Image (cartoon, rainbow, N blue to C red; front, side, top):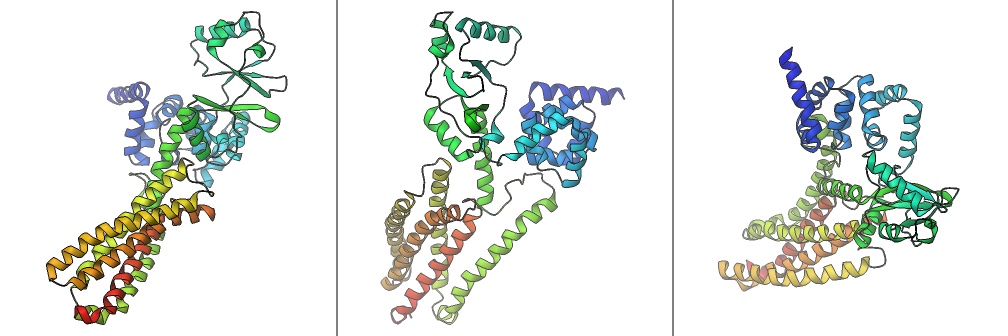
Length: 437
């Protein structure tokens, strides 16, 4: 018993002293094992340990606990993180948990969940500091000193609002210290304030943070009412999460999958896209099948098929990575998308010509047949142009159709480069078969 108590105390101290490392350790465990570890801790400490866990991982752990234990941990997790976790719980547990939460907390979570998933409304918090326009400079400074004495978190910015809580301006701390103590804050506030709607999506927030370098951005609702603020650190953390999600989506994995997610979860998320990939592989294989008899008479062609397809796939992936990043940072928009496509086609042509010349020279030197080198070089140029075109066009079209541009774009890209590469190479070789056989 004493050993167990000592172990619990060690875990508790670890969570409190290094919550980020504790979260990484919890995520490395199977959800059931992590849940057993948290059962022996107080709800407040358990919530602290889950603070840095991805919501999907936290939900998987809570599903191994009783509804009462899960609700207590959620209540201590803070309503915004709790809302993100709650929406990932299975329907049965979520119904049991919501019945055990107090009415005010449930109402706050419901309001948060009403906003779109990747919006400012989901990312904002409401512990901001605001003052009425007629408040004196002295009054603001006294309030800030009271906060400091109570060891409460310091406010990033102080906002000025009217009687209906509509945002009027923001206070610069330097101006506040230099102003007359009796002056109203309306005299020294900055009136030109950058603000966003709670429905502003994450991509736009990322672009704003990159351009303006503010520590926080106010969120205003109807009639300009100040309802919360989004900290830049939350935007950065959200961007990092999206980047990892996009990387997984790009290759057909689930955005919510983690290294130690349950095996069945991994299977159900990956298998559909593997099936799609199989269908596209058959499509590429059917192109080769069209020239099956010809390949049997010119077996050397089979050597160059994976080389041409592989180079096209690599070039297309380079383009895809740049375009998806540009979309995330709002550098790519509908009005400049076609300029991007044209640029990538030109880049593909130049790179294809260079790589094609090297491959053609290698084929010529190897087999002593300049016509074989010509076939390889032409196919390489065609496939690299197709790679640039598809790498830029696929995410743009997916965005236009309302899909996540990262969602398995890699699968569609490799299909294009395989089909185009195989057909360009084999059809050119067939046209020049008299020079190759």
